[in-house]
Length: 128
Image 1 (cartoon, helix red, strand yellow):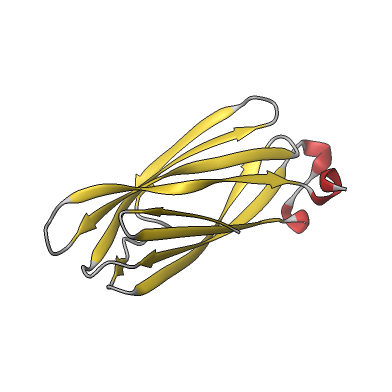
Image 2 (cartoon, rainbow, N blue to C red; image 1 turned 60 degrees about the vertical axis):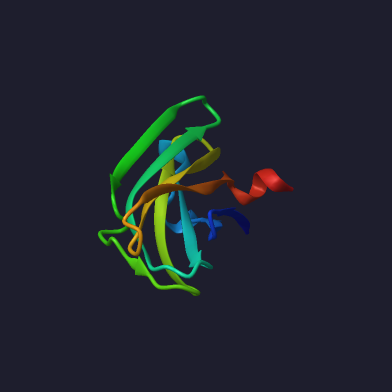
């Protein structure tokens, strides 16, 4: 697991290779990732949008932007957390993701970015 803290918001990521959905013959490698966003501040916040940077070992780069996460724009109360799971497809056996969330402080009305830590994805046999 990797974690990053920005302005009192802790983002933790765990990734997993999903062999059952992957197809090496078609150069399709699926990785799921579980994210927990912890609000350690005294104010309620809302996740407004996401911006991901994805690169595979072939040098292919992608950006993914959109509202919320998995169809939600969750409000995270002080000293609580929100978790979700999503997935990423790669055309190679290895890659990396990182990005930012745009958050809104519901007390002050101010928006701010929170870093999503960089995490690596690799099929398990490459790690032996």
